[in-house]
Length: 202
Ligand SMILES: [Ca+2]
Ligand SMILES: [Ca+2]
Image (cartoon, rainbow, N blue to C red; front, side, top):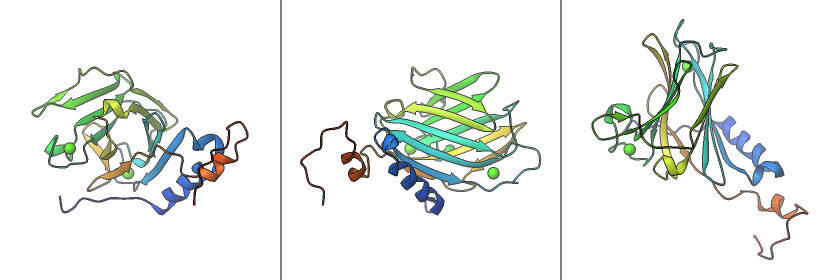
């Protein structure tokens, strides 16, 4: 618990502001944070270079996991362990308090599991998970409603093949808080199609 790491890169903040500044994006994509990972941890195993997490206003959460050395997924697995209640003391204690696991392999496609207290249940009902892999990037989209209605969560991303796993971050967890309201009110107010709200923002 004492080692919990909350990592928000300076570059990530710049990216968030950039996205928020684009009017078309501001209404739909409310939050986005980049979490970098070192490369070169393993000479042969899949190597995570970074993860981007974003959410839209209907709470679809997108994880984009970039691998440095896997143009195609091949026999590798990409994995997310999500501590949806932001509490390391609940969930799987060997997986950083995760309540949910999400994975993707070329063989089996995307999968999602919930920790029952003693094991992972990979047969939970869910309808929102979409995942794909292209050009070295794994995409996962899942709605917060199917991650315990999470508002703030921590997570660990993994990529492995033949028991060689790269975990990001190397220790601790990444943390993400959903942002629902567009942060730049002035940009929205200038949109001609939308009647101006009288509420003053000062
Ligand atoms: Ca790495
Ligand atoms: Ca937990």
